[in-house]
Length: 105
Image 1 (tube, helix red, strand yellow):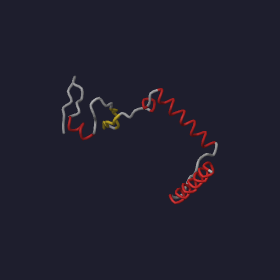
Image 2 (cartoon, rainbow, N blue to C red):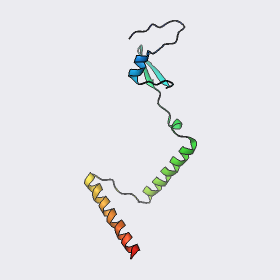
Image 3 (spheres, helix red, strand yellow):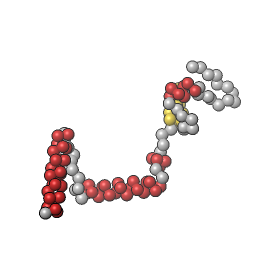
Image 4 (cartoon, rainbow, N blue to C red):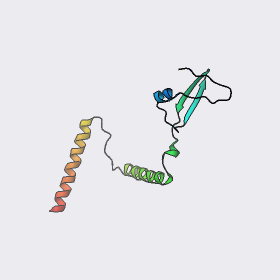
């Protein structure tokens, strides 16, 4: 498809090209120029734009809690194969069943 660039008119991306590129109305795009070639990319959200401040506090708290669990050694793995992982799950299941039986006795 060919369009004509005019002196005072902004460059217009035809609807069929926008559709093929998956661009949506209101979406931000980036232009990069290299050697006379213009590339158009969807503008990816910055990490700061991804969450509200409250959501970020919750995520940070969960991350801190998770790292504390790792530091305390309350994790399993890594596993070299899925069979090792499944065997570990069975062992943990047995431990849980033993604890349940002791409590109910």
